[in-house]
Amino acid sequence: MIIALDGTSTDLSVALAQRDGVLIGDDAWSSAQRQSSELLPRLLSLLERHGRPIGDATALAVGTGPGSFTGLRVAMALAKGLAVALGRPIAGVPSLPAWLDAEPDAVAAVARAGASEAYVQLRDEPEPAIAGRDPLVGRIGDRLVVAPAELAEAFGLRTAVSPRAAAAMARTAAQRLAVDPGGDDLRRLEPRYLRAPRGVEAAGAEAVRWR
Image 1 (cartoon, rainbow, N blue to C red):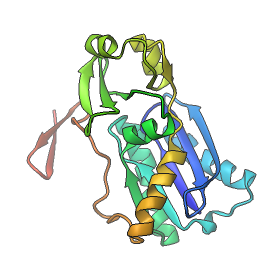
Image 2 (cartoon, rainbow, N blue to C red):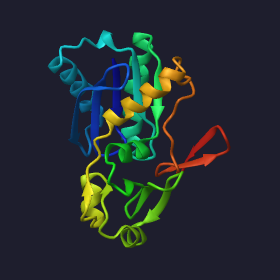
Image 3 (cartoon, rainbow, N blue to C red):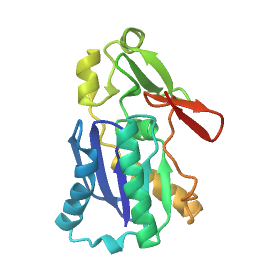
Image 4 (cartoon, rainbow, N blue to C red):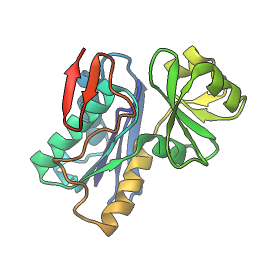
């Protein structure tokens, strides 16, 4: 059984899947400030509903961003902690492509990057980018996008659906682990940030300086 966690945004999700990626069950909810206190209880509740002890896990999957600094760190810490405690492999899955995988009709996935900017993953582009609100809205128009509810409201994205991507992350992880059963290097796996969080300044490859 694969346990998958997505804490990329204020719309979070968890999922359980068979080793081949077939979904067992998932849960999704919105939480602006309580990712650290809600993610594990939601996972435990999902396991209980499906009668699966946590020890049945064969692997962990977790979204790597870009997105919410706090949400990504909380989900990553939980996934890595479970991987260590259970002795299971872990697979980091880029979050925005997983959002698009979960919504085949969406043209873009959008996560908050600041008060007036967003991380944008267009379906036909290989990498995410940072865009301001007005250029983003102008380019997307009335086409379907995946975006957290709070961001859709703030940016006026009228045709947005909330991400529910943990199940898609589990499928991606299953495909990767079928080829490489060892998964990612637990010591090196980190969220992917396209920019430093507010108040943090990168100073070289390894140093971080607080302003």
